[in-house]
Image (cartoon, rainbow, N blue to C red; front, side, top):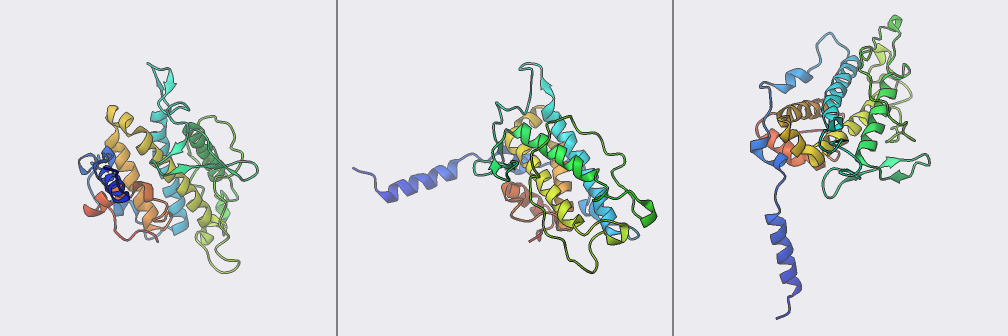
Length: 266
């Protein structure tokens, strides 16, 4: 008897149903190392200007992310290679349907190995946060540079281009985020671009290296850092629902537990 188109469709649906759910999308593995309200960690103090607060949050999130990335950059004594290497991770993947590409010198999207992509991101972010035109250090304008103690990033090859084209300025006149603290008009679009790249690194850590974090007993700290990252991004609209789609099942678990607000950025 020849299989029909309906039979093939049903078979595909069955395969989809029985496809194993990644461990990091299962509730029993969504635990954290701290308890409490993450909204408290994100809330801007009453006497702090929001631009300064977001600059502070950004450096904190960058430090936490770099700590998790460093674990995957440590050399495995058995293979003498980092856990995230060009052989294990030839592409910057976040699941079977998401591959992140970099922009080359001609602004063409190109696929690069995950460790190369991550190195580019770290170098690019470091260049942004130490740029006084974006994060001013002139205290005479009531601006304070929150990155004075920014940890040095690993020495890496210089990226050939910014990973994301910058959005247009918030407006040619009037107020903008961080204006009173000396931040430029494009400050908000810059930190949103940085946040999107940081998310991509987190997504790869889950899809490419969750088992490594489990073996190291570090999956709970990873969850905690990522939840804090997502919460800040949602509270201040630094990241969109579309951006976080690859990790949505985990976010759904945390929303069901009231760890995250259900109404994220549009």
